[in-house]
Image 1 (cartoon, rainbow, N blue to C red):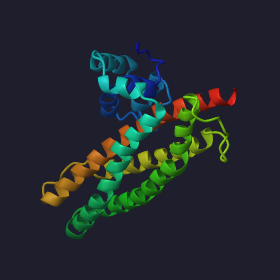
Image 2 (image 1 turned 180 degrees about the vertical axis):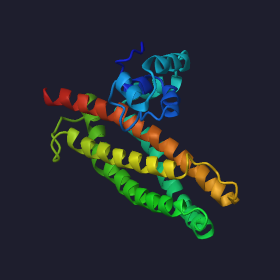
Image 3 (image 1 turned 90 degrees about the horizontal axis):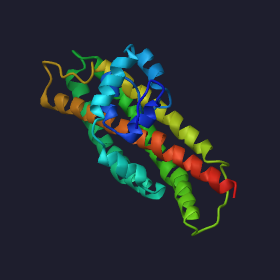
Image 4 (image 1 turned 45 degrees about the vertical axis):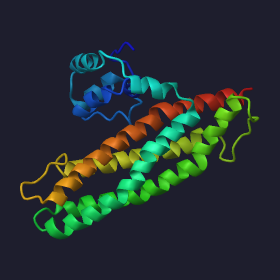
Length: 242
């Protein structure tokens, strides 16, 4: 992929996920707000487009086999990958983080009051993400899998009760945006998950877990916003005109 200042941020990451690290280093959102040109993203981040292009070209000198694999997956297989890897990750780590945040709030909030707000934000995220995953797995994902079955000639196309796939996709993308903004606040409150000098082991582990959770969430949202959802919309449009 030849990258120019007009290249779409999300498409760049879709073609090679190594670009994600470059964007993250400049605080450029590639998952929730990936649908914008590079020059616009760089301007808002306060970095010269030429500098960003140079860093991206250096990082993307080699192909990304993992990205090639994911882009080649049929949508039903991509959904299975997302659920098995990312939905499972979220469900596994939410209880651990809630417990650890409770512990460090009790022990450290007097000297680190930001923990109170961080815990409150993550509690909101935990509840909303749990409902979000259920909606995807019960409504949107089954419909996309049916589209793949139609494509293979296994079943006839039938319009869903919610109209076009863009409708639930728009809702899921808005919820992705909400989570992205929430974790942006958490990262800011924690000074980028910096470990205080007086932190106990649980404090250190919790901040490391939060950083990992955010990193996984960004990749999770990227796979849906930049790969799964656009392909699902395109596929349904093809089915609808037949």
